[in-house]
Amino acid sequence: MNLYLMRHANAGLGRENPLLDAKRGLIKEGKEQCMLMARVLSALKVQIDVIVSSPLKRALQTAQFVGTELGYDAKVLIDRSLALDGDYADFQTLVAKHMGREGLLVVGHNPNMFHFLGRMVTGNGGASIRVRKASIACVNMDQHPPRLQWLLDPRLCRMLYASVGKSSRPKTSRK
Image 1 (tube, rainbow, N blue to C red):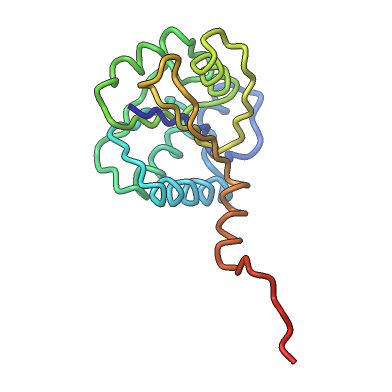
Image 2: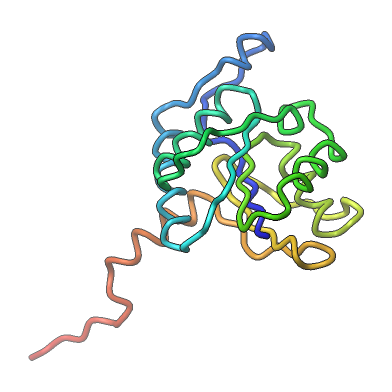
């Protein structure tokens, strides 16, 4: 199984009140990040069988936008282990529950996403892996310990898309 860990897209500035912050939705840039990252997943021919999200609005919106763009027609599941206060043991239970699938996309928050990712690929949490907003990491769960296959963030994807239209051959003058 491939596990795809995604940090929610840009939702603007956080709010001091936790109740208001939980209801903070994506801004325009965040929605664009979702569409871009979904196109990248589609171009990589990623197979997603289940999408699970944190209950916070910004993560749920990210999961729904990406799912819609990928043609995912099932309901996005919500799991507390992906919330801001989620712990690694609950996250492991979530992953184990879906182990028979080909692809599982989980959408959550930092610092959890990079802690979970670091702990999975090292076994002890010794790795510190930066996960920017709307970044997606692919982890092969069939390896022991699980192996990080790739990590893409919107900045890199935008640069790749921009360079695709340009020729890599140097221009030569013809006289």
